[in-house]
Length: 151
Image 1 (cartoon, one colour):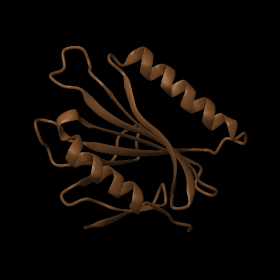
Image 2: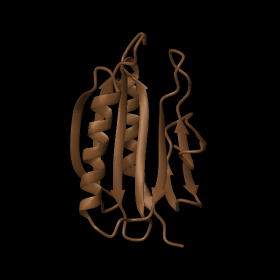
Image 3: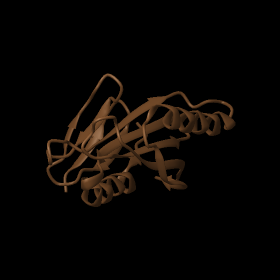
Image 4: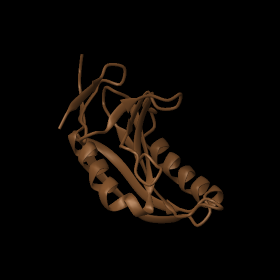
């Protein structure tokens, strides 16, 4: 599988076969899968300064959950867990929701990685519920491969 190094975020990772690397205004690193069922599963990475107060991350998670429940029709938190990505404490949430008029629900990932030298890394990914059995393992593989590189 191909690897990718993002110079701005100083992140190295392994891409699933045929995934592409790009960027958006919100995500300087944006990974996209080949199109299936008219949709491209994706995973975006962004960075902000690490808040000095570690409780800020907890409050960010709580605020995200309130926003999701209020703004995403049919919001259902499927899992939320603490783990480590490259030895850095990480919150990872997986949830589903169904936009009004959508043929099927979305499955999404939201994560916050607290790194000692790279700031707070935010992860956001999405797929269709019907693609979750293939996109989910691909996203998990990407996350397991992430390394924060010191320059």
